[in-house]
Image 1: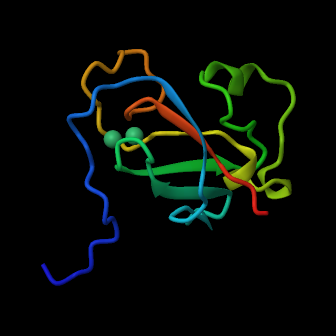
Image 2: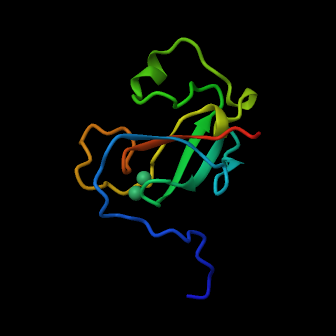
Length: 123
Ligand SMILES: [Zn+2]
Ligand SMILES: [Zn+2]
């Protein structure tokens, strides 16, 4: 392998699942970019808890992902256009590293270690 590893932190795949709020973390390491199909924004970064790569997509016109539970997306009458917001700092982020950490409940909405965090606002 000659490619540079973009994730210097090892992914702690053996870490037990736990719903834990990590509070605010530094924005360093997180990025926002338009999705390839152009109808949303993708927030990418490294989970501060398990160290796994996580990516969350925010669709324009869809309510934010600030609450756990997909049901509210469809039940909600109000929508908040993503282009008017900064999803990196306005939304809570949940670990979506894609690895089912040990003990993860079957009903978990996000496949990951259960951590959630917010990005610290720029000073
Ligand atoms: Zn995680
Ligand atoms: Zn993980």
